[in-house]
Structure formats: structure tokens, C-alpha cells
Length: 317
Image (tube, rainbow, N blue to C red):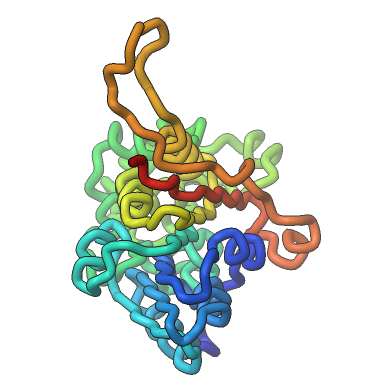
């Protein structure tokens, strides 16, 4: 299986080095993928350590099981979505952990597996499901959403300036024939975006639209804030959270959540006494890290990555 699963982990040394605080601890990789980060974590843990890996992609689960088969620490691999972190940890009997990792976005394997429908570079059915057990596909979104709904997700999740026009072209095209493949969708997008804009752009005209549809299909942003907060809730004092983001939308959510939890009082300025009762939960560990030039040259998909690290504060007495 590993021969067919390729994913290059981004900033592996910085991520794992910033996350681990004890060799005997419990660590959760919420986005297991091909187990690149997870294998590095496991290799640092003692036989008393415990790695919990979560992924909603069956191919990732199979690859991780093979890759982590020989490590010395305890390993539990869970086929689920990290939005269910509370119930996963309750089921495993580990409510307190020493570190949690999120490596967000789509994996190289998902992009490069044409039949999954994530890539605008290959003709394939419009799927884009990270968890193939779920019912909603990209095809359903493209063919069933209203023009206003399509324009909204293109604007909010793709930050696509031509989103309204693209939505109108999609709705007009699907009146003639359903849009079932990535090639059909790319053709519609290219017709909607003016030629002058396409010539002046450095990126593919379908990139932002495909990102938006993928985010909508998998509810990637809808679950993120609550999942980050759940992870912090389960950290032991001194435990750490590491989050890798790959576009501004998800990074904005992660940054906002971590910064809020790293603040004390959040009352409006000017109140004579605190009325919010908000307690500081985290200490931010520096500014967001970025991959170096050598890593980006070797893995261009790492270019937009940001790594944010934070540590759970000691409990107040």
C-alpha cells in the first residue's frame, strides 16, 4: 500500500520538535495521512509512550497501519474525523494528552490520485470526498446548489473575485447537461474567467474554485475552530498543540482561536472590573513558522505552509 501512497510531510523537524515534551507521553495526530509526522513522533517515544492517529481517509489509514507497524511505542489508529476528538479519546480511555497535531488541507496523495477528483489537472468524476463514506460529493454541490450558494462558497472559501460569474456559467451549463467531471468544470471556469485575466494570472483559473468546493464538500472550516478548542481542552498542563495550515482561510481561524485562548480577560476596554471570567489557557510559542527555501524547492506544495505552536498553561490554584 505504501508504494501507492505518497505524501511529503511539511516542516517535519520543526513540527515534531515543537510538539514533543516527553518520551513517555500520549500524542494525537489528528490528520494521520501517510504517517509522515506520526512516524517521526513514534520514533521519539519510549515503549511507554502512546501515539493515537486519526484520519477519515481509508487509504491513509491503510498506509499508516503498514508504516507504523514496527514502532516500539503503543499505537492506536482510528478511522474517523477529528471533529469527533472528544468521543474518540473517551472511547480510548485517554481524556488527557501531552500533544495534538493538525496537518490541515488536502494531502499530496489525494491530489495525485486522479479518480478522487481533487485535481483540476486530471479528468475524473467530481468527488473530492476525504471520507468516501460520506454522501455529499463535489458533483452534488456543483449541480444542486443555487447560483447564489455557489457564488457564496467561491467568494468565502476560494476568495475568487470572479466567483459570481463562474457560478452563473455553471448554472447555465448544467441546464443542458449535468456537470459530472473535473474536465467539464474546468472548461466552464475557463470560459467564465476573461482571457485577459487568465493570461495575466500565475495560477490555474480553476484553483480557487476547486479549493472552495473541496472545503464545502468536507466542511473543513466549519469543524476547525471547535476541534482546535477541543484539542486544547484535552491537553495536560505543559502539553502542546501544533497546527500546520496551507491557506489564509484556515490559518485565520487557527490564529484567532489560539490567540483568544492565550488571552486573559476579553472584556471590552474601560470596564472597571472583569465580567467575562475568561482564563488564559495557552502560551503561544513564537510567531508562525514557515518552511525554508530548500524545503520549498524540494516540495513546492509547502510554499504556503504556516506552523503555529502553543503550550497549555498550568492550572490555577
